[in-house]
Amino acid sequence: MHGRIEAKYLFGAALLVLLSFQRAHADPVGETHRVTTEKTAVLRDAERRDQLRVTIWYPASKDSVEQPLVIGPPDKPLFEVGSIALDAPFADSGSRPILLLAPGGGASARMVGWFGIAMARAGYVVIAVDHPGDNNMDVKTTAAMLLAWDRAEDLRSALAAAENDPVIGPHLDRARVGAAGVSWGGYTALVAAGARSFDFDRIIAFCTENPDDGTCHARARGSVPMTPADRKKTLDLPEIAAERARAGESHALPEVQAAFVMAPGPIQMLDPASLAEMRKPVSIMLGDDDIDVPPATNGLIAAKAIPGATLLRLRGVGHTDFLPDCTDAGRATFPQWCTFKVPQADTHRQAIAAAQEFFARTLAKAP
Image (cartoon, rainbow, N blue to C red; front, side, top):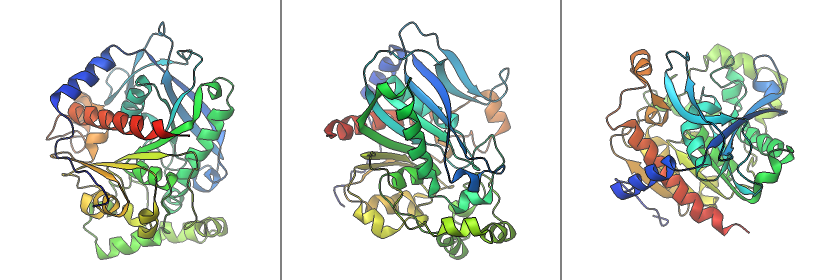
């Protein structure tokens, strides 16, 4: 339907071997950090800060020395993200395509670093964010959930900050900009590409009618508090009411030309009419065994509604397969997150390969 492509098996062994070869022989990747401002951050941040933290991965100079990047205690990490050269010089003076990357609910930028670092190794400048009020370093807030469309505004502010940065800006090809994300980040990337969001009341109504749907459980929300009392207290604030009025507006970034989304949700918050009106290329990857953000009520709906969307279905893959690589300590600490039917590394390789092919094809047509 709409030119959609379904794949039970995304790529053959030859492509995976090629990707592994490319990664092993690629130039180093740099990581740098910036802090910018985002006016809606004060509504979502528990300390009412207007700050937005930005993480950027990019091709670094050949003499840069990478160090392992992990999440958790350095002596006993829970997740292995990849390897980076912190604040290394850029590889050269050329401009490169841009990828805006949104993490999932309750996650910070480095939780999608496995994907971002790989895309930087392929030649992209990857700009990721820690969404205020919904990341794994700050206090999580109900407002961050209620004002979900402002996640796309975070990407807008991060892109502007990178463009205006004297070190980063000269390396950005503004004519080639893509968006990507995992889970809630998939929702964010679709909004950035033109989908319009409903008010959070839409997902509340959906969950009232479908209480057993995985999207409605705390785990899928990143454990952000959302009791009726929390919600009422937050909604009673005048500044929240004013921002809620912007829910149905377009929060699209005109620079974004294509979106690659993994296990996207909650699609129930997106206006079906706006999905049908999207004209930018979209590729949706999901796992058939996803119980946290079920394909039937999320990714499959988007794939059917968006004209020309490409659907990539991975058999035996769940939601947490898109986390960074679990270590032995991670598997012991989070067995509910780090137990997989399919090797997690295989899922990651397929996602990276699919994204590289998709953006090479879609961003190459930029004016």
